[in-house]
Image (cartoon, rainbow, N blue to C red; front, side, top):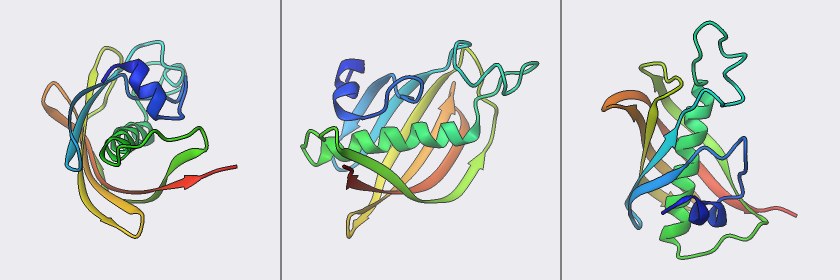
Length: 145
């Protein structure tokens, strides 16, 4: 799944689109995606000038975007421009290593449960096989007007 496909599925755009490529996807089960972290990211000049570090909340957002791609693909739907995926919960978020310019962040999400329109995912992000971040994410899809 290349960037053109991702742009059709997600409403996010620069500077907030945080998934560059989908590496693997098993509908209704799991996704593995990639975020190339570059020095050109708009958050690095302020976070932090002497030691650029990707904010943890943006790693969680990247994981949520990968999870949203899994959900849209699993439902075999093309979301309209009026469809967004919102966080409804983040549990057990842990940050294990800093992520900086030049890193390739591997995003993995597995569907844990779907109930009443709420999706629960087990997620993890890693760099070179080392765990950077993990969390249980809960999201829902809504139409916006």
